[in-house]
Image (cartoon, rainbow, N blue to C red; front, side, top):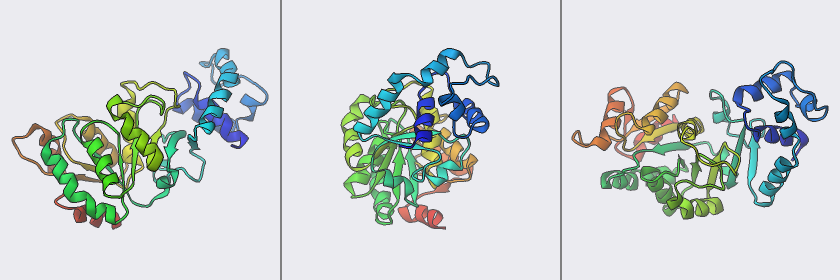
Length: 286
């Protein structure tokens, strides 16, 4: 790991340092040499306490980074070639991504975010079973959030069909949530990819879940909503995709089913109605 990357990752570990603060520091000092080599406190950021400056240079952070390397956890910064170009173009992209598994998947050309209700129905499962084979055959990487329900079905179906899939999680890689998907996560760390914007020791917190949705949609060419209630997290992901100019696809459903209310409304608003994998590939390839 080169020195600049180590500085940026160290900075990313400090509590109280957000996206905008890192941006300001890099704008003022592009290689972070003032902060790390000269230990000079930035006067233009008075809200930073000197205690944080000490934190930057703590042995504890250096030891954590060394442990990541020993555990084959990849640290991918915004400036690395491995960082997905399509995600780099989004609003406030993560400065650092922590991944375990096949980071080559980040550079695949076609990626589809697949999200939906945690209370998945048999209809949602059958739809994924019917639609995925065409996508997998065309080399589409399935991106989802490792949540129970549609996310889990999407990851498992992709792997069973011999495809590739990426899980973007809230919290760090050492704290998989939900715990019921720990075995799935371990399997994906071996043969697929599990990704987070939070250092591996970070506990999953409620506010992180909507934030991770921007990565799921941001690194994907399009977002497919399989089942969703009104005002669900899946609809947030769809809105994020729209804001970034990405395609949004939706599975039509029974008008009497609450898990289809959100997807049917998306179709009313202009999302592409999906009957088959070809409906999605037409847009992604275009």
